[in-house]
Image (tube, rainbow, N blue to C red; front, side, top):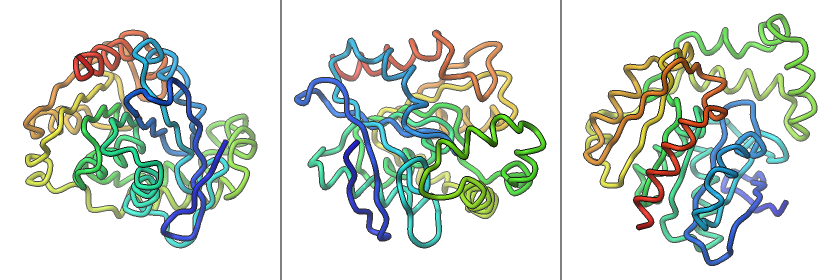
Length: 243
């Protein structure tokens, strides 16, 4: 995996697949995950001939981060990658935290189309408790061990605490800014998502002038990328944009 320096003084690692001359698509993963978690979607999209660029967001996986870890600094890092690779307004698909970063990039005019999977547009008041390392260990000791293996630069406990603080204190997106988005936006969300209120996904699709909403029945938050109907919705949306 190659890496690039970030504006904050860290490094951003990324992996590419697909034809080098294909239309670029950024794959942005969820909190406490890495680029590898986007593999089911990458496999679904492979037949479209896209140049897929999956990143380890700052502080995650191999990517180091200096300074505060915020939505803005994560978007800054990905914006730097867009510039350095000369991508010229790529498409983007983000899951959960990655979708929030994708929305921030869209608001900056840096992407030409956006897929948002199960992402918030407003802060999570319970995020500090949800991401507290001791709470994660208590809920799933196995997951805690897996996190230690995934995140090789930033200790997962520090990463989780920083994410909990940011998602709780982050002000969210201005509805007027979302209403000014000029790019096509697909919002995909499960009807059993207990981490992101369904109303937030619906609101994003309603506010975005070119927004669409796809509800995935009997799907919660963690398994959305493993649902064939969710992945198919993303593939169909992107195929329409490529046509």
